[in-house]
Amino acid sequence: MTAALAWGLAIGMALTNIVLRATPIALLSRLRFPPLVERWLGYVPVSVMAAIVASQILTPGGRWLGLTRNPYLLAALPTALVYRFTRSFLGATAVGMLSFLAFRYLLG
Amino acid sequence: MPDTSPTLPGASTPRSRFLRGTRLGLPIFLGYVPVGMAFGLAATAAGFTVAQATVCSAVVLAGAGQFIGLAALKAGASLASALVAVGVVNLRYLLFSATISPHLSKTNRTQQMLLAFTLTDETFAVNMSDLREGRADTFSMLGVGAVSWTGWTVGTLVGALAGSAIGDPSRWGVDFAMPAMFTALLVGQVTGRREGVAAALAAALALLLAGVLPGNWPVVAATVIGATVMTAATR
Image 1 (tube, rainbow over the protein chains, first blue to last red):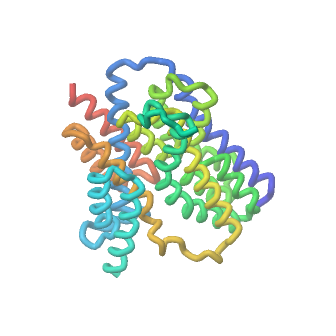
Image 2 (image 1 turned 90 degrees about the vertical axis):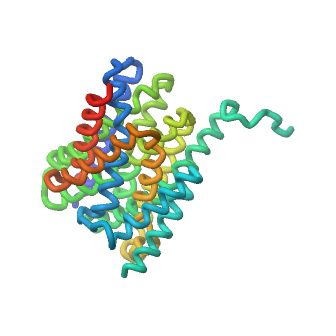
Image 3 (image 1 turned 30 degrees about the vertical axis):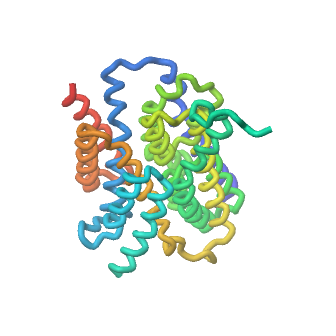
């Protein structure tokens, strides 16, 4: 890989991403959305998180792991419970990682 | 002189809110370090120097996008077509940016640009959840962004420097850091029946669409379709 190509990729990706990330904020943050759009945007966070969780837990790395011998799915249960009762992201993440290690070990 | 001011959230300083954000973003840091290391490894293996790999992560801050750009170049694609691939993979940032924009109406332009630069799936999820609970502000979001950026950049540097000598970080359970964080965030988002239905719908759509769409597209399509169905169904 030539130096020009490597730097070109870094700078090109930086510009591509900042345009995608900043344009809506720059154009829309001072506007007031119609109520319908606001309602739609209100459903985006819960939808995107559910879609990500389903993908990451049931098909990690793009492969369907099933419902029974799946350490990701099993570890998600204590993670959800810890967050439900402690409201701590860090605590839930730590418990999740430890349970994941335990389930992965137990399932071989 | 001892600080006698009340410790109400409203009385906190920008610095304390920024630090609160960095604590909130620690799970992202945990998840980004190993993935950043993997990028550092992949980039040096593809012929990047340590400096090129690290600067790339520091100025781009985009997990999947960076891997795709790198893979395209490695496969012999032109720089322009590699960048188009990166742009397509990261089109979802338009959606996240539009969704968070109404919450940044009082944020100045410089801070808006910093928040835009650190907008990723993970920082978006953490900040939207924190906003929902009425606690997030510009400084806490900047803290979330700063700690995430640090994890990604430092991870890349370590991966690029140490190469294959570090071994596989997955033995520490880091594979589950991001899924765990998103699981917790999802629990925080599901506050009622409507949100529960929206979550179930988007999850089912994402799994179904994974059979027909590549990469991140099932998540994006499930979100757009799910949110549209919910908006139409709940008047």
